[in-house]
Length: 375
Image 1 (cartoon, one colour):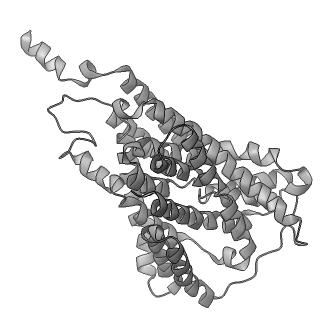
Image 2 (image 1 turned 30 degrees about the vertical axis):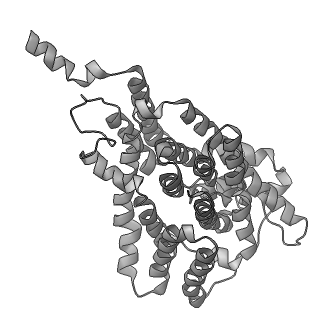
Image 3 (image 1 turned 90 degrees about the vertical axis):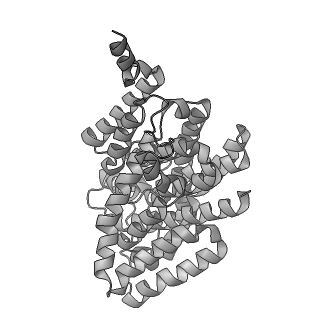
């Protein structure tokens, strides 16, 4: 009987808390959303299963979890905690991104910039709620709706909040089809949603090759903290557009980015141990994240309407919502909303311009915040 009792004391059942059970349920909900609703399955499924794995408790003498030095999960999570995985994700994003739409319509870049308002308003809100400047900067980047950037900045400024910030950022990225449409519809009229935009001009191969080099130099000079992210983003794009490294570009946008996404999502999920994750701070971070995402969407839409006051060639304000960095989901939501009003109105190509501009904008924002708030 003593042997049996001793064995039972070492099981996860004996050490399970209510918080662990709650996080396991949340993990199951993420998996359900990924499979049944197709909400960012490449992210939510690894994160959801990671939540389940990370909340099965072990005895103190066993090194199993992501916070236990020497465990397997600890070494996988090292890529998250030290900001290694996000630049590798950016390399893959660059290798699969076509900047030609953005180059053909430079004014649409302004919509991507306008949507970054959510970052700085969230930072102010976090300061008001009592977070330190460094913590507020890490929380604010959730407003850019860019998971890798949020992880990268949180690892530098507020590593103790990394799990909550990462889960919030990826959760809201997955919920783009739920959060954005009501905001978009509230701020636009049917007449505005019916606006048809002119087809973009054709961009030459030379422009496509020069752009990543010039854009990197400009962005890096303004925000040196973003060199790691933007360097990999534009390097990946140069691999794609150069025409002489297709094999490398193919590897970056397929095998490599898939492997890193699996490791990042799973280890982030494992980091949500109830004992460190379920805190009042996490609740505030999730609340601020939802607000920042709505503000970022609204900022892009309203700025498009503002530009229409001064231009003859009107912009469909729905396109402004794609200024958040959730690529390509925000652009798909714009296409969906536009076709609800007019099935023959194709906004996807136009929406991709502010969408990819938002990726650059959020990375620059992260670099600025890191430079200003470090130390």
